[in-house]
Length: 298
Image (cartoon, rainbow, N blue to C red; front, side, top):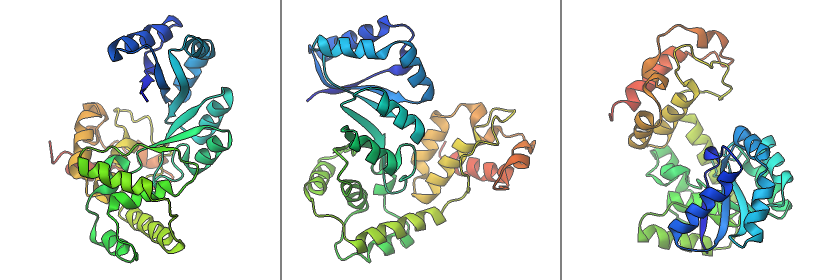
């Protein structure tokens, strides 16, 4: 089974649908793709797809036999997700889902919604890009030790996702043969998690959240910053680095995903953000802390 994605952000005219698909088929040296995703949909890309008459393009893909099954991957809010699910008879979708992000983006409600509509549901980020597989802080490790069945942190994360019968496929980001074997074992164990085990996962989630450095809710009232700083993204990276013992990985993202003007280091301490923050966060001080931690690996 061959799967790949259509780069929706590159769509500027209707002819791009055929142009990029045919280029992919040529590079893959095949005449069809089994599973094809309209990739990384959000409100803006979804609106553009509709303007470009994606339905006509998709029907052409399927009628010609170049595509067997059509789906989409998603990064936005729940309402947008439901709108997309309802707009076309998709075969499947791909969403971000893990025990730390149960209400993030499509979340549990979106998972149930898509499955009830007959879509296969592919899960990405089940271990948060590896964050939930790392050696946890002592307080987290002590909670995992309360379980009768001992598992690695990665296996706990995967088993929690597999515990939802609506899930069809889990993309676990395996990079070693040992991880392949562990993940196959996890996927092959169909016994549901016990109430005690689910309670432990909830306690682990709560313990991770207590390690949060910046209690930012992502409301974005602080945006736009007059100097271009992406305050919520800086806080997200700062929190993830602190919570999941992942300073190195989040520092890489800080230096390579954020432009110099959007990093915490670009803050000029005007204070506009603090005057509108519903959480009354000391944003200027937190940005200094974020930069100190995230730039340390530069």
